[in-house]
Image 1: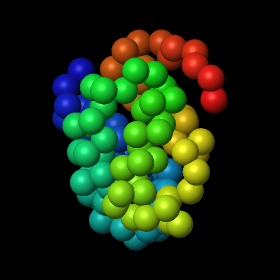
Image 2: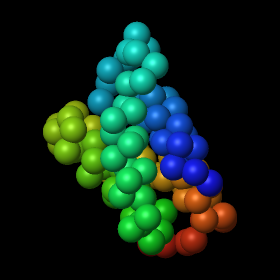
Image 3: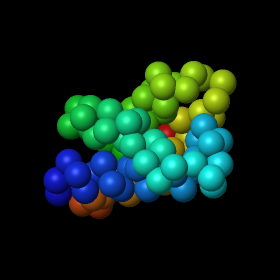
Image 4: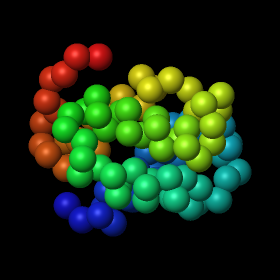
Length: 94
């Protein structure tokens, strides 16, 4: 799996999730900067929970804590990213 594939999955997933509420009229590359930062830091993640927390941290960094929801809302996307990078999800505590 290439960095470009991960970045594309993250960009599409974040657009779908739209945690900052930019709305459907946003440009197609909305969340690409955030996706790039998540992809850059992804190798340090050791579980789905770590990926989920990483996504939330990056979104807070770019948008602020009031605008990006709770870490749990990133769980499904984190599972997809983890599966793409590592195969089936490792079970970890919530």
